[in-house]
Length: 284
Image (cartoon, rainbow, N blue to C red; front, side):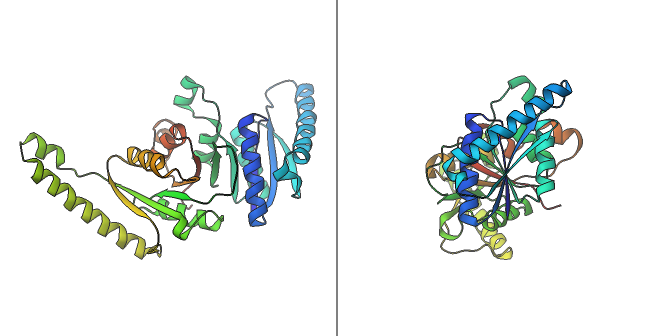
């Protein structure tokens, strides 16, 4: 396995480097650190920044405890940050990209997204966004399941990368009883509405169990919850209640304008939740 850890030398990036080092140590993976130098400036300045970046990367490999015990490689590339990271991932054969959460620039991000969101949108690589200070290996994980191939692929990828599985992986599924609002406005009794919601929850549970069995993910010892509500609301509440070390979520492929401008559950999760997040793209 090969891990690529991207850094812009910020505190956020340093958290990501430490986590990448710990993951590499525990999995026996190769580790490459990459920094991208903006090439839209005079060549002399680009060359100066390259040399400085190489020096800082070398110092960080020696100074950060989680990196100093590993045979890490430093790589400096030129270009736009998200494109440079993706090119570095392709050239090193990365199985995982690790990045720190980026400070957001509100108006710009509405249209193009942060660097990490652009890496996730446009690349074929699983991306681990590190939000938290690292103090131990991941021990608990939460994975939303929407009964789609991307959610299955996310769980399988998390397992392959050595993230928690089995009893340490909890699943959450959101369901929305579509007729509940109409029943309320029609004046039906609370008992009738509650009975309908209970039936819908039971139906969703049966469908989820059948889906997991069909995809060979039916671990009977695993925690599983079926919650009423919109997907992001359910994921947010489950994250707040269970406080997992890492959230594992699949992304749904998009193209064209929809890919560039429209929000998704995964993008809302990335922007809003203060937890480490493994975002896994669909199989291509």
